[in-house]
Image 1: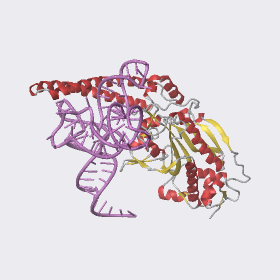
Image 2: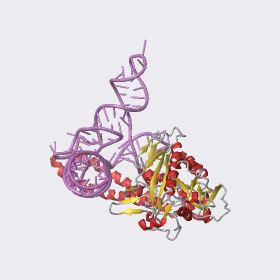
Image 3: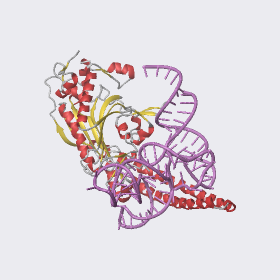
Image 4: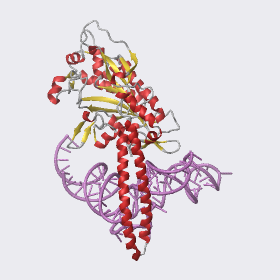
Length: 428
RNA sequence: GGAGACGUCGCAUAGUUCGGCCUAGUGCACCACCCUGCUAAGGUGGAGAACCCUUUAUUGGGUUCCGUGGGUUCAAAUCCCACCGUCUCCGCCA
């Protein structure tokens, strides 16, 4: 019913699906298993439907029959009903078996995505020059604590490891960053949404976040609700089960664009001992997320647009970064292509991820049953895309990049209007 | 937290008492055509979603869908159960 890859594509072009699975390093045999399950499912459905048609006709005869004949007819109908029930059960089972298998097949990777795993990404470009300091640069923790921008010790006291308080200029900088991002999203035609961060299991599962990353998710058993790790969950669920009004005759139409602001919660279950210092990897942070619903043929164009908004932010904030084309094996099951931007972090002498943008083509929408009407009036799944426009983590790169010998930090010009014109962060 | 009412194929409604004539009727909106020298009104027809079979086809046929999922029955929009949601009243907290 709600299989995630296109069942017609699976049936008609199994080789394409296999090629994609191979590029990801995922199971190729799964495709054949799904094909067999599909054949079985269709046979079972056909059998059931034929029997049901027979039963429907028979039922009318029973209803219309004179009283004295009714008894004999009912006896016959009982026997038929038994067979219908069994066939119905077989059809349901076959349907479920197919869905379960088909759901394991991941989205078809777009041509050009590098094959292989996490380390096989391709760097598309490096932008900006890595800052050179004529003094010993401090890391973001030293800077943040001396400038009283965050309080890690008290965060741990109150909530535990990987929690923190943003304080003073830290709190203000975060709000400024989010507002800058929001203004840019507005200018690009995104509708701002402040989303729920607690969602029902159906929503969590429907958006695919209970799959491979289930142990990353906070769960509240008393209320059977999940805390979302990104507003993407709510943004994707927003139009669940709807037929959207996207005009297929206006190919340049931008589609529906939403900018979701929310706090994000992550268990970081698999990352013990990793990035334990500072606010780089935390259980709770804020994020402004872009989310687009577009015609499938416009998806790649939209993907490029989302990336350009991200790069616009990074450039204007004076950050040095690179853009990578994430390899097939590191995509996540919904994405057909993913670009990450990574900012240069001087204290680590390495690039760290600041944004990510995924083109989920029609994969996520098929699961969420979000559709549009084609020119012929038929319904078809839309394409969905998402991308980060700002997060708390950006503060790390901002502080380290714009620090000065005296321990102060220069505020990038684009942020100043959001900070009452302030140009410099100094210790209070 | 307590009590109650409700959920019908875009919207609004009929149908649920007493299961079979529901192939879910009607109005509005929508589309095509007709008529009226514009507009409004009127007339005729069309028109929901998913899946399966068939087809060169957007062809023809079938099955399912009355919030969701189960159950009873030869037969369920209609009876039973659970869940989800909406609304009203009371209580409690902001």
